[in-house]
Length: 453
Image 1 (tube, rainbow, N blue to C red):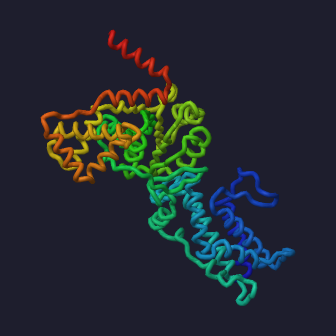
Image 2 (image 1 turned 90 degrees about the vertical axis):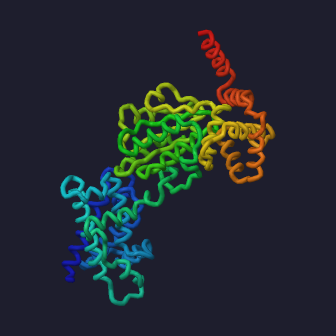
Image 3 (image 1 turned 180 degrees about the vertical axis):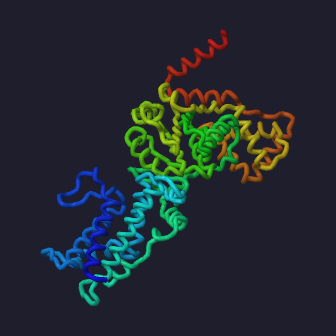
């Protein structure tokens, strides 16, 4: 390759890097430095740009005082010690295409702005690859200062020279959301998570609530709406489990676990990051929300306010407290009914059916419920709730001796039923602890008025 051709390719490579990665709106770069888009490849891109500029000067016979272009090549090798530079650049390229809200699936369409834009950026990327070939051709045959890995680092090959179908397959492997179907959102980053939860087919009782979750998330998965779910109940009734499990029941949905604080401080950032993945659907779950401590401005702006929530995301907010009226008007409210003796027995009957009993015996369910309440009285559980009932039923599933004892009790003439008063007293204590005495007084007044009516 002639020096003139090398110099031209090195210069064109710099121009192509600027076209792809330069951010003209970003400030904060040091004088004389270029401001590149915020991607994980910024150090590599900036170092490559400098190496190409130094090599162009050397190829044209110029000399920059105190700097040798070999130093620039060695700096590149240091940033990609275990893989070719082209592969590392591809990572930054795919990341930036997503930031521009372009999806490589649009490339498979023969016409349209998505195809045109991607072809434009792809052409510039291949120009950068050609500049790497020129840089490699410029390397001296023998140099004690040149890193021996330089030739391999600058080796040829990029998937962006292949057919669109292959590019799409490789881009999918580079997509961080391929690593999992659930992520935690922390400090502006997404980290794969493995939340502990039961499968929806292991939920018992609360049929109406379960139906609402499944129907609402099914519609979102099918692209028929993204109205937020606002879920409230006393602790332990299943808000967290239902929200996570029914989200992940649909393969189209990726679950994002976000801290309640993100509702106040990171709402715009979270939305901006997720809307770029327009071919994915995200259920963003905020657990343990305390409505009185939240600055709702960002939520109200993006949900039913001056902005429109992108169709590929939906919010689920779970709280032990009621939501403000102006927030409830922007979503669909799901409220769990109180866990009492009737719902306890209902859950047990569902469990027994799942356990394999074709004809569930009402007396057997009642005796199991009474045994559960008895263990609560013995301080084996701190609360009467579906959460602790599930723990008891799992013990029942494992313990053959317990099952035999319960079966014997259910066959006696006198059947012990769960004490409704114990459930009532526990629920009143929970309501008082959460909402205060005034709430209990209002509840009593409402019941009295209902009786009078």
